Amino acid sequence: MLGLAVFAWALVEWQSGLPGKAGKLPVSMMLIAVLAGFALAPLAAKRPLWNDGLALAAGPLLKIAVALLGLRLSLVELGTLGLQALPLAIVVVVLALLLTFLLARLAGAHQRLATLLAAGTAICGASAIAATAPGIRARSEETGYAVACIALFGLVATLAYPLLLPVLLDHPEQIGLIMGLAIHDTAQVTAAATLHDQTWPGAAALDSATVTKLLRNSFMLLIIPALVWMNTRNRSTQTGPGLPPIPFFILGFIALSVVRTAGDAVLGPDHSTWQTTISMAGQVSIFAFAMAMAALAMGVRIADLKTLGWKPAAAAALSALSILALALALIQ
Image 1 (spheres, rainbow, N blue to C red):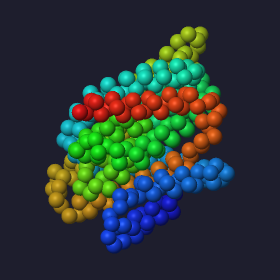
Image 2: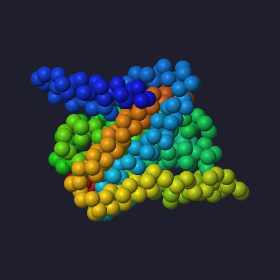
Image 3: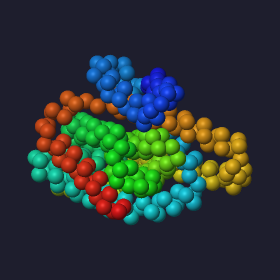
């Protein structure tokens, strides 16, 4: 994964040095990492020894990358963006849950699969699916199917939304809000926002996208136990994890926002050493995100979508597009 991230960085550096229009093409590390991951996905499926590295990049490294983004925002900025995003996040999460579940059931999906697709679409992608599946006794093929849907549609959104949204919206903060509301997984949201900001230098979609997505993630503490209860309330005994694991990377993000606030107060926001530290943390975060996105793209298994038919996947895709339309309507 590190090799792919370095390759993506080197290719971007080389391309930016080309003369004329070739050097101004909208190419970023995230774009190259995702495309390289897709290209290597068939090979990764035949290399079980790669699984540990893929899990490391898509798990702990991703969480570290998200936490490091906290250094970009002071508590004042975090609070301002959070207050703006919170009502929008509540509306989108609730409607996304209901719409995805309904469409999946109409498409013939079992209640378990419909629940997994709803959780993954509305809250935080594969993490929500993994936290929900044991509690509702989901079958392995249902879990794999839901994860494949979320990964595939989210990665498509990662590449498409940075190109689509600037045509529809003028302000980077609004674009970030839409990405945070409408893209499934945390890594996909931050990758899409980073791709946007790298394509249009000076834009600031990443901050609002990250805060909005972390707000959505925090809903898993309430919604996943509710989904488990709804699926098990008619059983004599319930099995499952109860409350999902606390998303500690959100706490890490907030903690580093506190560090940013303290550093700005003690050293001053323009202090050269402090700014260098923040910049270095940002670069580490970008490299970690590139590694995570490559790993997630390499983990997409189209074959998983064949196990339970195409209709639930089509319902999930329609739901994702409907959530995008809803988010745009709320922002306008």
